[in-house]
Amino acid sequence: MSIELVNPNNGHVLTAGASGLSDNGQLVFPFEKGAYRIVKDDNYSENFGYQWNKFAGTQLDKTSKLDISKRRFFAETNWDKEDLTGKNILEVGSGAGRFTQVMLDHTNAHVHSVDYSNAVEANYQNNGPNDKLQLFQASVYEMPFAPAQFDKVICLGVLQHTPDVEKTIASLIAMAKPGAEVVVDFYPITGWWTKLSAKYMLRPYSKKMSHEKLYKKIDKNIDWLIKTSRFFSKIGLGRVFNRFLPICDIDGTLPKGLPYQQLRELCVLDTFDMYSPQYDQPQRIKTVVRYFQEYGMEKVWGGFIHYDNCRAAVVKGIRSPISNIEPQTGS
Image 1 (spheres, rainbow, N blue to C red):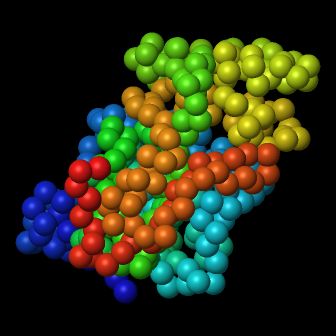
Image 2 (cartoon, rainbow, N blue to C red):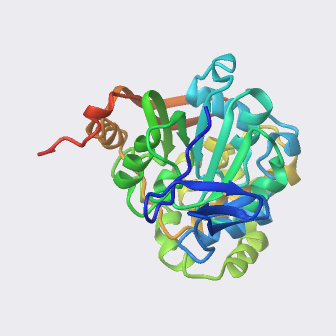
């Protein structure tokens, strides 16, 4: 079934053409470099546009010759490839398209992929053109789709970087049809110590730096940071001291045994991803579970999913009938 496109500004049905999306015969959203542009580039996600166009292929399985993205995608969703045949999947916050590629290469689903930044250009470069893919540069709060149409909705690595996490979850759920599944992952709050780290000490300054200046600082210092992090891990003090180093969590988020240059590139990318976003709001799993329940989700599950040497905080659920999607009051 095709997805009905609507103007998020007025609810009018949109018509897709070679030049873009039209409202009553008037072009309102252009099609540029492989994506329909619902928003402009100058927004809070500008850093991600810089990041994913600079590191367009770093996390892609077909480029890295690893299957990190594939393993993470199917571990977190537990979706059956065959069950996705012909299904409409909404992917929100696609970046350079690491999970877009997994869905296109390993399933026969139709993927509608959204990102707020011009990272859609990197996604198209990596995955387009493809008859199973449509790309949109749009806000999660104003997506160009009529509600309750998608069979699956997925949002990986994005939730904490949006300005209003609860509103983001409500927007995702609104796009799922009754009986559809919504899956999200996010940075978790695991205790009072979660924000006791170099990341949250330095972010008030780093997020104000120009993207190019921040990138150069990270690239210049990454080698000694990798060496120091490995030293602390080797002597058994990594869990205590590495959190105070301004570098990504090598032990907890990256595969073991990578060639050094590949490890280095991933560390630069992931460290930039830590320090550049405008928003970084880790969540308690129980809070995200509550949001799911309040916005009409059933069979809600939340917890940690382990794969390789990594773990991810994941919440998933099934959308209940439309009559029950309003948030509960008094909670």
